[in-house]
Image (cartoon, rainbow over all chains, first blue to last red):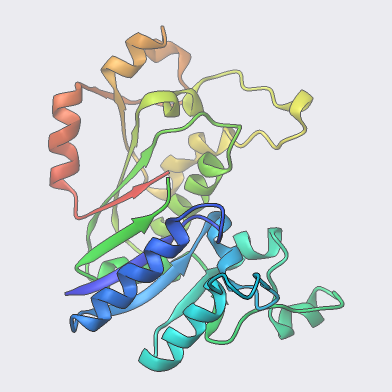
Length: 130
Length: 120
């Protein structure tokens, strides 16, 4: 089955971010296709590489990056939600004249059209959020 | 691109969270993909359509004029829950746009008829 995964909550406060990752990993392990993971609303905070949890805690962000590297996953961060919350890649840092960028490896920033296109192509949209 | 029946379900009050505003953005972007779009307002989501919204005191943009623009984007199927209207003392005349009232049992069928449900 072809899935698109939507993540609406940021990491750590809600288990949503963990569940989305675990579902995606399990779906891939079962041989399903995950066309795209779309991070929306506060979910865009799953894509900052400055995330620094204590050593005995999971690193939710680098976990996504590793899964993307292993499976060629398309991790897309909603552009409008990201800029509002200070998630920037290098080119946008320059364009917006900011002094830092923080997008984690394996993620890319793009528009809501990516979510819509994804669900049109997919069999199922699975949403993680309240 | 394949045309799917997309239902945007609006469940929350217009302010207090960003979901109502995000839904407007997504509906307008979605309309550019030539999909078959319907909107459904249930629970406190009904307040999104209420006339006379004034957000000056909370310093948040009043996004309600956007609902009147939906027609220009060929977004014309707007459904609301009859039960949610009654529970909130709202009438058609209180709303910014023309809507179709549906019973909750009909809403269940409406959801079944759609390929994709975006929930806000």
